[in-house]
Amino acid sequence: MNRWNLPDLGIGIGLRTVHFPHILSQRPKIDWFEILSENFLDTGGRPLYVLDQVAERYPVALHGVSMSIGSTDPVNVAYLEKLKALAARTRAHWVSDHLCWTGVQGLNSHDLLPMPYNEESLRHTVARVKTVSEILERPLVLENPSSYVEFRSSTMTEWDFLARLAEDADCGLLLDVNNVYVSSFNHSFDPNVYIDAIPADRVVQYHLAGHTNLGTHILDTHSDRAVDEVWRLYARSWRRTGGVATLFEWDEGIPSFEVVHEEALKARAHREAPAEAVHGAA
Amino acid sequence: MAPPDLPLDRLQRWMQDVVVRDRRAKDVDQVILPSRTLTAPERLEIYHRMYPIRMREALESDYPGLRHFLGDEAFDDLVQRYVAAHPSRSYTLNRLGDHLADFIARSAGLRRGAFCAELARLEHAIAVVFDAPENPVLDGAVVAEMGEAVADLRLRPIDAFRLLQFRYPVGAYLDSVRDDDESHDHPRVALKNTWIAVFRRDYSVQRLDLEKEQYSLLEALQGGATLGEAVLATMRRSRRALAPEEFFRWFRRWTAAGIFRATDSDTLSSGL
Image (cartoon, rainbow over the protein chains, first blue to last red):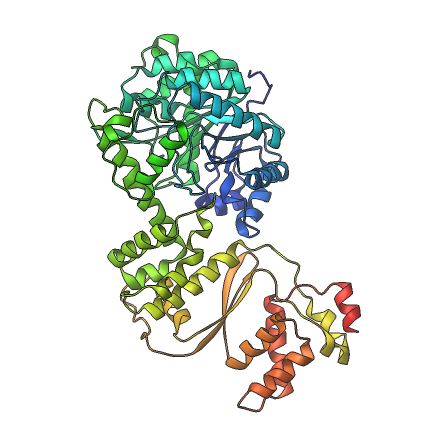
């Protein structure tokens, strides 16, 4: 259990537009949904109508891509106020975003751009996480990103940075196991070391997803089933954290609701994986 | 030359210049490490390549008609020039196209630029109406019971309503694209005045093709005129005689479509 006693919501999937008709008409049995915050912040139309129906029937958590927590631009208070209102409207169990920046000088690249991992960026991010948590009136939950570059100015590993950030800013972590795998391939580190270094009592949620391996590097495309190595890393981490809400993301070439849900439910088997299988992760 | 220990703010501006502003950086090796398979510039290039793809996807989803008319190559070129001039400054991509129609209208060299600008304006209205706030709609029965006092009523359109006039048949063109039939004959891109109302009903965006007089009446109401003032102004402007039955028929149709907001008691009492 995490230190805030945030609940293990079970195994869910991301709420996606293509599944709206199925969800509204079939009311499928699923533990919970993760909501992409920005898709619902400025709409009074069908998306919000569907969200209200979903939030009435299922537990939800908000997951954003535009908080830009690492940016050196000022914190966008108007955005955060809208996010807070959406969390209240949906009775979201928590609000998460990514350890990244999306733009500076008022621009937004709409990409999850990586941070350099050093003392300066840590101090900067800790201060901003505290500010955001105060505005949201709840602990912020941050996800480890997948990345394609490493900065020469980094002086610590990503997992050390995350662990210190979580401790100093008192925030939760959304451990994206696929992102750990993607970055381990792109940056040649041992993903097991990463998984083992994450403070278990800070992990509030897991992400699982598929990716695209281009040989020279892996892109985090959320376009497929998760590979075996990712499932093994999930099992390895699960043994450390115990019951933590788990969610499968599928964002490109999204198959039917049943297929995505079926993939997510594979998590059950991996939670019960024997130790030797878990430690066989490359 | 960028030193490896760039302060965070300078590092972020440097990277954003490459990714968003498409500026070539000569000092990548000073800032970014190579991997076992990629050089530092190749690694940075991954972010640089993904940016225009995201922008294109966002605009293509809101402007399918424009993409269809221009074709992939010209649409890509337009997107690239547009986002260079109007990069996203919002946390949402939903409003990325807010300046697109004006940008096209001001741009030189785009094939059938005036038509494209109008098509973009129609598709932008559809996108805006899709996300507009929901309002309670006017109950036609309430208005019917008002008798002659209805002439003093100020009817306001719902938030999810846009009134548009065009010099080209962009609505018909969009219909032909939505038929999803590549062999379909698309309307000729020739000058033809058209008037359109875009609105949302039951969370579905709909389009109403209007006559010039209908547009005039709705425009007057939207501008704050009372029903009586709007009808008189429309009759004065019209080149043909308009019978009262026509106005009744229009209002019944529009009220059934739900394009007017519910009239609150204050408006009703001032009208009475």
